[in-house]
Amino acid sequence: MTERTVITAAALSEPAASLSGFTVGVTADRRRDELAHLLESRGARVVIAPALRIVPIADDAELKAATRACLDTPPDIVLVNTGIGMRGWLEAAEGWGLAEPLRAVLAGAYLVARGPKARAAVRAAGLHDQWSPEGESYEEVADHLRSRGISGLTVAMQLHGESQPEYTEALEQAGARVIEVPVYRWAAPTDPAPLHRLVDLITARLVDAVTFTAAPAVQALLRTAGPGSDAVLEALRGDVLAACVGPVTAAPLRRHNVPVVTPTRARLSSLVRTIVDELPRRALSLEVAGHSLTLRGHAAIVDGELRPLAPAPMAVLRALAAVPGRVLSRAALLHALPRGADEHAVEMAVARLRAGLSAPGVIQTVVKRGYRLPV
Image (tube, helix red, strand yellow):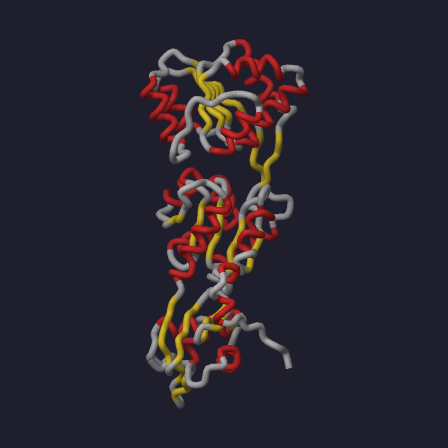
């Protein structure tokens, strides 16, 4: 007999179990282990599926040309978008013997750091930033620079993995000359299989949340989904929480009318706290046959104790909980199970569900009709 893992009510009340029963997808690459650890330390099951990877371009001709352009015509304003980009730019300049001239140019410019990581990299380089947007958005930066007046000025913009033509155009329309500085590029993950699996899990509602730490990861996920991108977006609009580290990352999802949660500060720890606050609130709770029942992603909380369930029993429970008191036939429940199942699989799933819940009377058989949750 296999022993089942049950988290007691006392353990479930601890912060370390705040995400127990939930599954969270992680699309980050560079800091995926850190984010996964933060989620797992709160009880979550984590699916790591990098959507993109960062490819430094220290030897790239475009970066060298942009650096030369900054040295030939020192920019009046420098927009530092990312910490890794700032460090990479200075490291590349070091390799070309241009580090000190570049530092001198940057020291003479009005430095804008778009977020705390960019600000930290600026200061670690011995430079001083003059302004940062409170919400860390490009729109705030563009509005701030336009209000200062940039007609006739040169703005060097360190790119965030790829070109942002809408912001370059906004600055140019205000009269600025813009030098784009491409320090790194986004590339497809070395192994695309985990991302394909995450797409399937999202579509099947087998993850409860997906985290995004860079806007291009959203496009990468949808490209991977291909013809199934509409199904992914439909899941993200309803059953699967989209959690983004900041408003810039969230923008592509919002353009697809996906509701997004973001922390007040663009930190991984803050992102995890936001998920901790949000996911339990989304869990469905019922009183059934004298028992309290709460549905989490891959588990049910029965009278305060968390009981993990396999996908098929959990699918049956979700279907019944969506219409408490109503009888669902085997044929109706069959639609909730993975493809290829038959009515016998429904009976097996119900039997496993009853055993997993260990709460007599919660799953009621209605002879010749089907099953229901009596309320």
